[in-house]
Length: 459
Picture 1 (cartoon, rainbow, N blue to C red):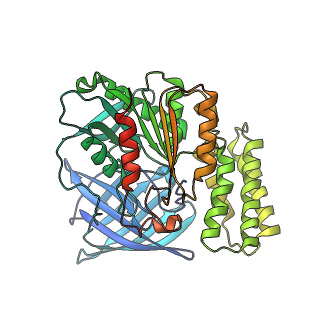
Picture 2: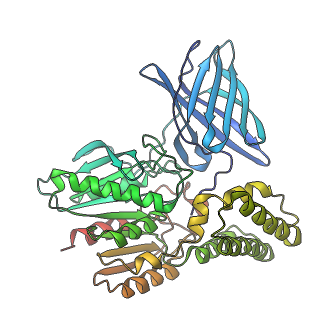
């Protein structure tokens, strides 16, 4: 579910500017091992201050903020200390090339940037006109003292009966949940608003216009962002009499039940490809199914699954270990032993694997059991998934969600499997994630209809 971007994710903003004009977009190819990734830095002035963001189009990551940006004497410096990432480069005399070095931790890569114009590719479902009110909003997560930015769309009807908050899936996501030139949350918001449902979608903490630190946060932290969004909608006069609930996709389908389990004011929850089985079980299923679809040999898949299982067992048995160095040392031994014995042909950077699996987010995520929260949710729930979802297997997870909500004594819930849809709820051929970019459809109409009809029929 999570996009593990080992070399190219960081957050932040700011600093100063002199000399030649550096504003605009600059791109280059970062060669790391056998991989080549496009990096785009977008720089602009705001109130005389130079600010920048980074895109990684090949990975579908857009609008990531940079902590500090400076351009003095034609030298560009970008600092993303949270991820230990730095870029330093010199602008040439023609002001069309920046030659420099991209660093993360101990690793260093040459990176040459050139000016280019970013062409935003539109999809056929992207809305081009709006017959409703569109408002940029900011609301506060008081618990963590951060401001979150989003877009609120309001139907023209004076008496709005329903309002939904969209919660994104895993990875740093902007308010449109943008991925491979698809903007699913923009499509969801447009459709739902046209059906009379107000919709709030927002940038994840530390992404685009939202404050906070994404990389140091867990799913539990994201649940308080979602609850802050709920409290904000409750404060809006137009929504005084509206039923307000959540629509969570993937990891957002974990977040919604977390909030609903502790807050009885939540009026409904829609889980789009949300998990119902323990995440450690889901991760094994996900790796097996996706590897098969990629044509990975069966014996190699079993070796990979053995490594994954050993890592998950270690995380579970050492969940209470607080000393970071001790935890990492133990995990490194487990991974090194498994690689040497079963996967010697895998040219893996063990320390990078350790960094990923020992991270705060992953440790929380891997230990997550949806039943802990779903079995306490009493508000109306709709859970939908696609039959071709290879990331959150439809049959297993919908069955588990059904079981948990039955234990909760929930009197109003429904689970729906949509034939031929993938994890993004697109009509697919195989369901593999490599298809997401190739499919023109952003969200299948059957999924849109299923959700809007269910919400507008709530009593």
